[in-house]
Length: 302
Image: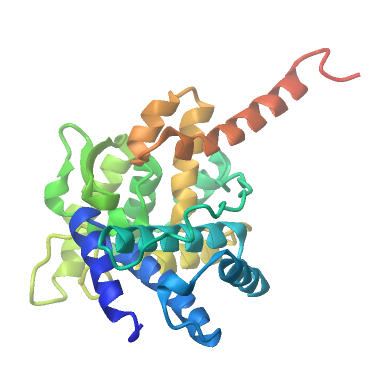
């Protein structure tokens, strides 16, 4: 983005200072905006103010030809709309050509989750005698018990756990903090890991760390490391479905709602800023209710 370096720096200040955006969010904005800048260069468009509805229409066609989903296209439009909005505010451009562009209607897929039997299979077949096994059980128990994101999980420190109140202090998106409770199974798994397995792993390196979850060398575990662990667990036990961190989050929310939890409570636990984001899980619950009704009511079927 050499040509529009100054414009990007202006926008970057907005993201960092005003939005307090996380690094991942900034990276996504950079990716989407530079993608459009490259399109402009290919079309011999040298100024941001040259962009009009026809150019945007051609750009959208390019995105769809590249196989992007409606969700990804909507994200690109939203990023560029915000980009131009800030440049307008800073008097860099006079208008925002993306302001009137409608976002494509997105399909709302039902999130995939694990059934009770699948969770029991995973946890009952894991080895709790080794340091890494204790760590892995603690990760799955905690993520299933709290619904935290994998990025939130790897950031947890020893100071973030309150075993008396059985809560963890989670640093979520936009550096927003929330307290999330956990149950007895997660408490037992965490206690066993911290008192035994974690000590063995941390002793492998000279420097100490406050992060709860560490790798085989005693260094802080990464999000990619957690994904690798889950992949290996699924492979080892012959699980027929994919196991990834967000599926544990989906499972947490779905099981709570299926057992009568209030939607707004689940929203708070998940750290969702809006209720509409949480409502996607009600589709799963309604689907389950329908199946139960069809199987249980004597006059549901002929």
